[in-house]
Length: 353
Image 1: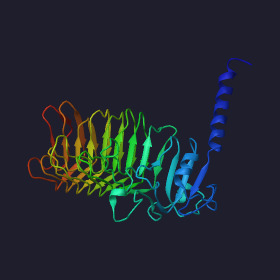
Image 2: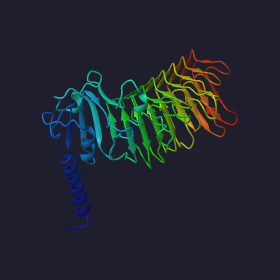
Image 3: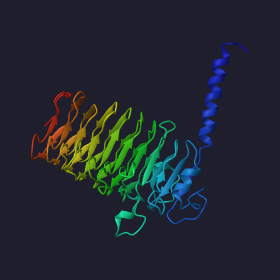
Image 4: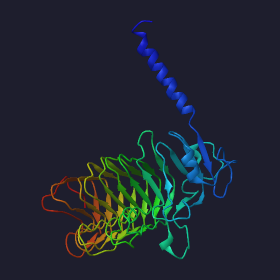
């Protein structure tokens, strides 16, 4: 065999191996109340977590419309698995992913595991993504995540009531999800009610998601992040998220709080509507403590009690970029209603008003 032919043969072998691995990928099926093994819609399982756990990298889990709960204990959670893609929005007859209807077939992951009149017994975290990979892709797509209550004083259980992303390099893609009605107000330290990200060098992505009616004690009713290498938030809407505490430092970010040590934060084509913070710092829409790029975003009717109803760049020594953003009807009782940055912080570009 000539030396010249070896690379070509190796390339062909690699392609065949990749095709073989892809062909072996398995799809598992879940329906509310079903009792099967998950091999087809007709044999669907009713146990979503069991199907995720049974899956391997590149496998998919298809979930039909219904309401699914992670267990009976407050520490129970839907735990994503590295390299596994979980899709909701199915009627339960589809043969192709493109046939699903996410809006028409609501697929709900709920932390309402106990007395429906008592939120103090709800799940601490409805969904958890612990050190999951970007490649192969770990994906949660087409779900409503609601009713999480992160109310413990134990570290970790006062944040991320809806989704908790944690662990080195944790990099899930969260797409077409509604994250709503989650609560992190009971603990004096409660934050990141909708989503909390504490993923060292992680690269999580949020796309086409709705963060609505989430409530936190000190910061980030919608989403809180720290320690990521790259955080991307694209085509998302943050609406009616709030923080409630007016005492303490680094409070604020009614919808979104970009915490410390995020290397690169990119927020693109997002809407921040009617979010509120009563914190001693500010940022009804967003409070940024790491360098952040805002591009093509709308800030409308957000409110802060202290600084910047729209966006607050809140750390000295960081550089943030605001490009083609619109600020309208934002309110602040103490200072700039649109946007504001701390002395020592800087911005490039000028937001549109």
